[in-house]
Length: 169
Image (cartoon, rainbow, N blue to C red; front, side, top):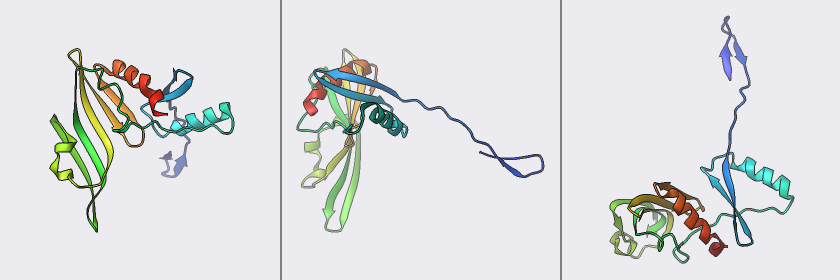
């Protein structure tokens, strides 16, 4: 950090900062998964520390959820609806590629969205609103493997997702 002294000359000071990463090791059968909450840039430090502990050959890959392998979260709740969708790489013409983002309070059915008819695209982000026992929550799946869970039923949704992790390896 740069400060000015009483004579107006710059002085430099080093500022120490503290950062932390909340994580959990989740064991499902004979597999161990690392769940990082609110991952930030300091996740690299955590992974480097794990590599130091585990030794060379330690690798990490994100678990990704896709339409072909839906999580049982959706069959375990009373109601679910797609409320947010972001698609990328939608080729409109030979020289035009689009990013499209959709949101709805009432819910969407991708197959009924005529704007996407005939387009090849990749889903980058999908957000679902879920209801369980009268309580609401949201679960968002990103193409990079991040799953964000929020709302009153978040602890139950986290446990449901963790139960399915072995299906995606």
